[in-house]
Image (cartoon, rainbow, N blue to C red; front, side, top):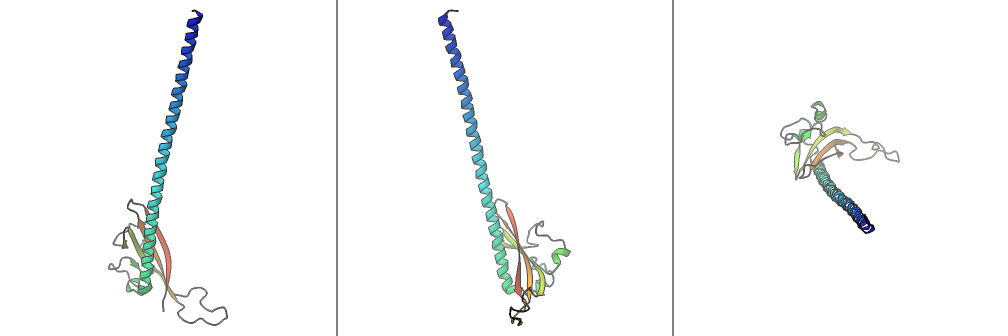
Length: 179
């Protein structure tokens, strides 16, 4: 081998090394681009899921507000004394416990709750009648308070659902003067 052919052989080897390093760098850049694309797609889906959860919780809160507004004028409804299939969303004291009705696990339907429209439903259970809330016996001066001092207590359970199937359940207790 002459010195000239040896020098050409070394240049070829350097070219092959450069080609090999370039291919590796291109593969690394391509891997980074694919990873960035997958992460971006995942973050997009997560943001969408959060929006669906917000829609569901807002619908549940709207159902709670509807039930509270209804209770303001209808708390003395006869359906709270005995259960009626005419008003399957109103439950008397203790009915849900004795009949194993749990808002967290039940299938919400027209047979046990009332639709508020657009993916929300609610049910109202009477928890107590003629209860005297704490702090209503005497005011700070020791004189009895005047006016109604007894309340009926209700538990409102509401379920909201988004159009993609996300569901959220909210519950609250609500008191209405009983006298």
